[in-house]
Picture 1 (cartoon, helix red, strand yellow):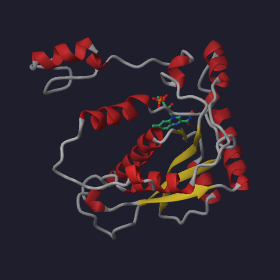
Picture 2 (picture 1 turned 90 degrees about the horizontal axis):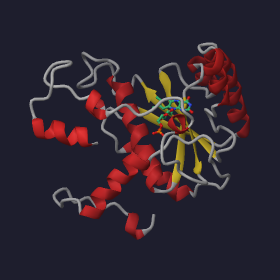
Picture 3 (picture 1 turned 180 degrees about the vertical axis):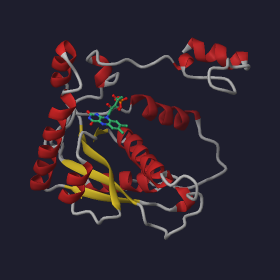
Length: 240
Ligand SMILES: Cc1cc2c(cc1C)N(C[C@H](O)[C@H](O)[C@H](O)COP(=O)(O)O)c1[nH]c(=O)[nH]c(=O)c1N2
């Protein structure tokens, strides 16, 4: 780890303007990458930093239910690609006519083009039979693991590394291919690598599949559909 990237906790120091804008930049410029992967390997120290960022995600009862499978085996990746192709054929059946043709033209994975794949799993039994905070909502272990994925994704963007999530996969076949124990769920299958470019907008938006919804349509008042009583906030949201 280079000195300027060594994390030195300082709970009480406010973020500088530069640090704050760096965080927002990662959020706004993070992309799901499928088509722009370069074959260059990710330096081990960089990958270690990204995994450490994932490992600092919040988790229910501090359960830390994640494990990270760093998948460099071409044979394993080819097997996963086979699962994708099978599932993607089924997925295409959801669309007819022009939409079907448009779907088939989308690139929805970079399993072999990226230099390495990563499966972030959720060990549903970690922490024993009762985990603080998980009594009523059992899926909180899965939610926690999603947060680890997001930490990884944002840190990767800051390091100039693209991440693409592939979920068009049969979970049971994936678990079997990765030899996961029964209680371990393959939550996120990710393709990672340096990229030729980060697109300015989501690839699905660029290709006319779907657009970002206006935030103003999504923010409600105290109950579903109720207007915001905070007028200043509403005005800011409408400004976009
Ligand atoms: C849980 C989950 C699952 C998937 C995705 C994301 C998430 C969160 N996305 C990526 C998704 O299409 C993308 O995030 C949106 O289109 C928005 O684009 P940006 O991520 O902002 O670039 C995704 N992309 C893809 O090409 N193949 C896939 O199977 C999936 N699956």
